[in-house]
Length: 112
Image (cartoon, rainbow, N blue to C red):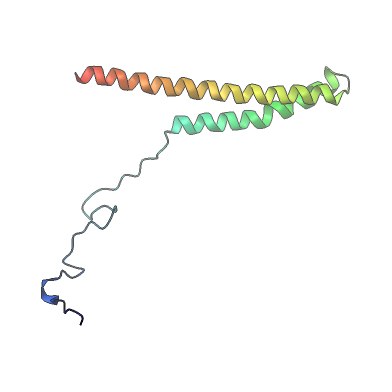
């Protein structure tokens, strides 16, 4: 047979805490700061623009002026320029990652 619940001991929806799960309480201010810093977004946009403009621009600039209509060499140069942009992005990302780690180490030393 099923057991009966004692309803008088249970909290109603209005009697429960304001905090439900991970949502903030009514009197707490919510954190609306972006998860990614603006400098990182700007670097990503700059490299995205470079990935679009540099290979295509180098192809059309060199196909008639440098390689005299030879589209194979101009296409190879465009592929090389795309790889240069990609490698540049990786280098910048690795340098940024190291600078964050060094800054954390400096802050840890200050706290001691």
